[in-house]
Each structure stands twice: as structure tokens, then as C-alpha cells.
Length: 240
Image (cartoon, rainbow, N blue to C red):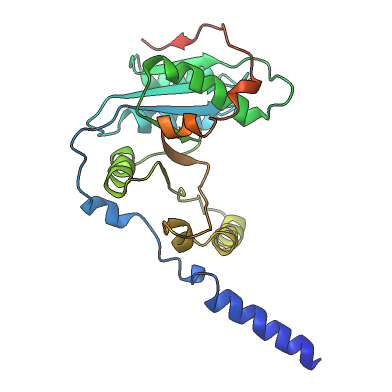
């Protein structure tokens, strides 16, 4: 029993002192408002994979098209063979804004997972305009009007090729209020945000729902695995 007690104390000591003080939940993006603006704002294309997201895609599209971003910005939504009208809902939310392209998803080839294949098709469309940066974000996230501007400002000011934010998760029901904070703490325990943000740290992490990438660096690293994918000939749906 003594050994068990010592093991339990050691485990708690590691969690409290040896994982970057993750439990303080002190790392956020409020300091981004004070970052200097880049000399020139890079062009950005956001890619949103969406499968059966008709209930949320409208709010996501509207929030992205309402960004106060000073540079060139375009949006690609990949309707991943949805059965609920996700594509038309995205177009309706854009209200004719020509910056939106909704692309019909093709059947998934062997060797691809669904979301990565949807992203790859969105990338094929994004590459048409050769943007400086890519924003990968989910179809159920609403962005604040300054979200993209802050992401780009941080990437520029700190010389980063990847910047990621974790979205504030919905905690409305009793089950959500009990389970979601525990999930966030567990994620931070595995990948302490302070360690992930340190340039010299061995720990690296990103929240897949919101990732800003330098396109050239992304391509040099191999992209999303496009060499395994056949070239696409499907024409996109275009807003406007």
C-alpha cells in the first residue's frame, strides 16, 4: 500500500509540476491584439471541408466572409457528398459573394481518409490563385471578425509557418459542461500549450479546427499527401 501511495503522489506531482502547468489554462490569444501589423498582408484562401453540415455551414460561411482582413481573402467550401443540402446552404449564406467557391466532393479514392480527401480537393481549388497562406477550418466554427487578421499578424510577427487556435467549445447542456472541460484539460495534459508554443520545445501540437499555414512551407513538407491522389477534373460550383 505504501508503494501505491507513493506512486499516486508521484503521478500527481508530475501532473501538477511536470506538464507545463497545463491546469492553469492560462494560454490564450488575447495578446495578439498588440502585435504589429505586417508591412504587406498576405493573400489567404480558407478551405472548409463539410459533410452533412447544413445546420452550421451558413454561420461559418458568413463569419468567414465578414472578416475585417485587409489583404486578399477567398473561401473554398468542399461539399463532401452531403445528403442534407450543405452546398446550397453555403451558397445561400454567401448571398452572391464572389469570394466563395463551393466544390462538389468526389468519391474517396483508396488510401485516403474522408476529411483529408476533402481538404485535398479544396487545396486543388485554392492553388488556382496561389495564395501566400492557407486557413484550414471546420464547418461548425464561427470566427470573430478579427480572427484571421490576428492569426496572420502573429504568424508574421513571430516568423511562424503554422499558427493554430482552439475554438471555444459549446457548453450549454449539463453533459457538455461536465465533459468538455475535462476533454480540454486532457488535451492540454498531452500537449501543454506553453510547450507547444515554445520554439525550442520538442512538443508540437495544433487544433485541427483552425490552422493557418504558410503555403510554400506546407508544400515543401509534402502537403496533405496529394501524390497519392488522382488529379481532379470536376468543375466547382461558384458563388455569384
